[in-house]
Image (tube, rainbow, N blue to C red; front, side, top):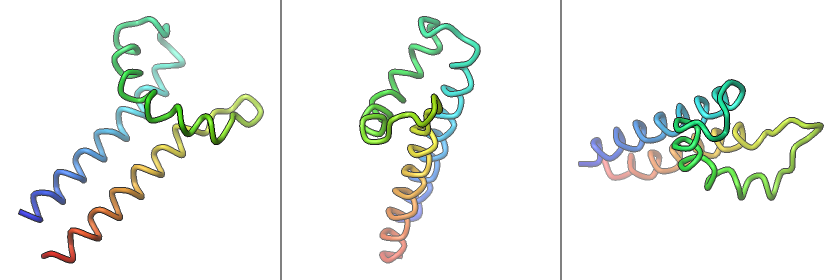
Length: 87
């Protein structure tokens, strides 16, 4: 059971990181009103908004997606470390 939870956390973490990266890349090419962008923004924006409030853009560069990816990886590491204690 623990092994399954570890695999699930890793898969969800990887999927979320990919969604963030795709959203950032598509933001350069697609209109904000494109259906794909709207769908991705529904997932990513609620996670980015608190980070953007805490860390404003530096010289027009938004580091919030990078910070979000680092946070996702950190949470994944903490959860997996805790779960491995029960193996």
